[in-house]
Amino acid sequence: MNKNGAIIIVEDDTDDQEMFIEVFKELNYKNELIFFNDGQEALSYLTAKTSEPFIVFSDINMPKLSGMELRNKIHENEDVRLKTIPYLFFTTSAEQEAVVDAYSKSIQGFFIKPSRFQDLKSIIKTIVEYWQKCESPNYVK
Image (cartoon, rainbow, N blue to C red; front, side):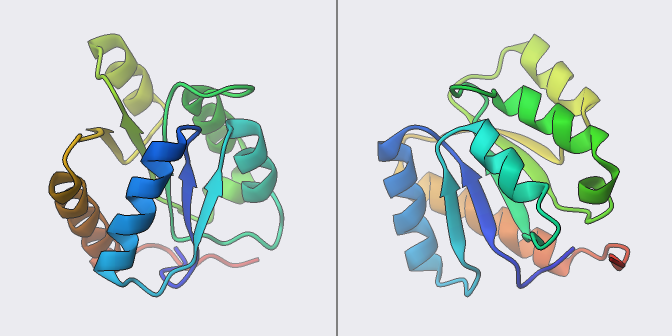
């Protein structure tokens, strides 16, 4: 896990993107933020040999390639899987079937997007600080 790597946010809603930008600005993390509007764009980035992000926050319902499809393709790609990039879902609803499906694909968290800025900030802070303290195998290229 590259703790200094970029934080990837796969989100097609511009209002949600803006909220993430403001949260990360207030939290003042040094990681670069990279946004993708759909899962296909994110997949191209994540499967590039030079890509070593810190964490991925992904919506589920997106055009071209859904968050579930994206996670499945990442999980099946050994090169990406060995980078031990935490992958978390942030979505507007949590139907039990979607939660079960997500965890069957070895995600590291499933969260409902809060509508309040302070709630999102609190969740993001907890997640990032947890992964900053977490140990993982060293990724060898």
